[in-house]
Amino acid sequence: MPAAQRTPGRGMPCEERRELIAGAVRATGRVRVADLVRELGVSRMTIHRDLQYLDAQGRVRRIRSGATTAMPATDATA
Picture: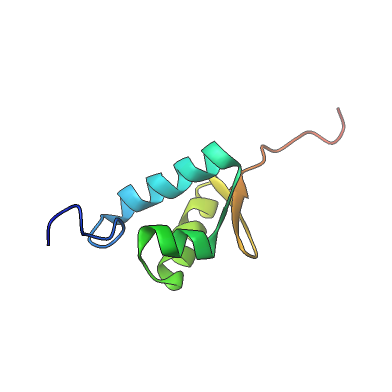
């Protein structure tokens, strides 16, 4: 299938897809699972696994419908 007709996420290495997701979160502050599924052409489970991985890395913060920017830890005593 020519690249112009190929769905962006299909066949894309997971590292590359995760970079796109993390970049979208940085750019917009928030992403939704449904939007990522539609834009990347992968399953909801794939997006959930990607968000779980990125959250574990501290790159995004998972929320019910997607992810937001990872909030840095703050010192509550300051």
